Length: 151
Image (cartoon, rainbow, N blue to C red):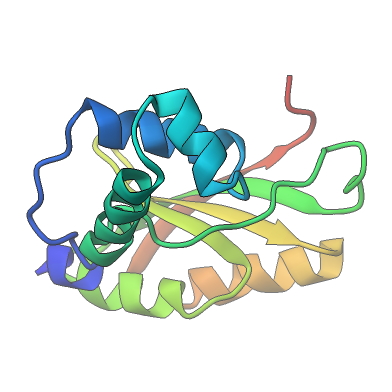
């Protein structure tokens, strides 16, 4: 049931070429296919086919921009650990995925059920997000840590 909500990727066996391609794209999501092909020592068509397959299978959800920390100093970033009541995980995940301030959501083991990565532009917005998450039916407990500096 959780897999349906998390949109588990289509079953596709990933090989070393796929992993290498993903690694290169994590480093530079805008790299030209010809450059990727040169680095991977395969044809441009092979890279295009692999990339299409990775996107279509759900392995790659999209491409984004990473901003240098010193450029984006005003962004409030945090990790929120969330404990969920009983069998409400699916409903809680649906609600959390609708919040644009949550940039990533992870299931985990241990005392916490979920970990949310939060980004806001102000402390008042951050406070509102914390309240909104805590008000979701099924959220039993949470603990949040602000991220100060990435090293």
